Image (tube, rainbow, N blue to C red; front, top):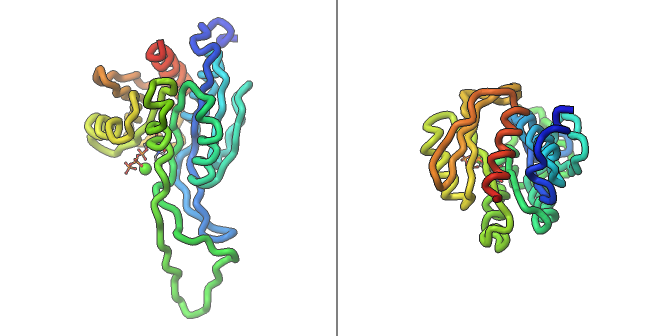
Length: 224
Ligand code: CTP
Ligand code: CA
């Protein structure tokens, strides 16, 4: 009902969002993941939909309901997520990378469950780096020309402003959003630091849906 009275700032736009963790398999029954709940990305998807956008939500493994009117694509690994993003990026006007993508995946995935051999020996896990999904999209011709507006997130444990500014430059995105910690994983509240070419401004502590609506309004304003 409240949504009904909100201005449709993103009508006619297609917003692509990643959310949640990724899961990197070790063998058919094990893997590594992280503590992302997906709540912020799902709240952004809901807020973008409320604002009138067509929304595609590429979601890692999370136990959250799909926001009404949002097209959801479920993925497991970072490579799966990258494929799903690439399949939708050409049609998108905005890409918001809210997922906590695993930085590394096991170099090999065992085809069968790894068994203890009885000797007490432990498996040696080797890792390889996952592709940077956001940096890849941000380097595309459409993003470089301004036709696709890219937004990154950063969760840092310290020196948020400096790290967020550095990350914005390194990823090549116009807007980088920092989670103002100390630790927001799974919680319903957060505060955000918006870093763009003009400088930094804070969206003060609120529930994640309110923050998502404020962030969507900020993005819509930047699209002009
Ligand atoms: N990201 C991504 N693909 C990756 C890693 C990160 O798309 N393989 C995106 C995240 O969704 C987020 C942004 O990049 O929007 C920053 O992620 P973050 O983990 O904070 O940065 P990293 O570049 O991975 O650096 P580090 O974890 O070492 O701080
Ligand atoms: Ca990372």
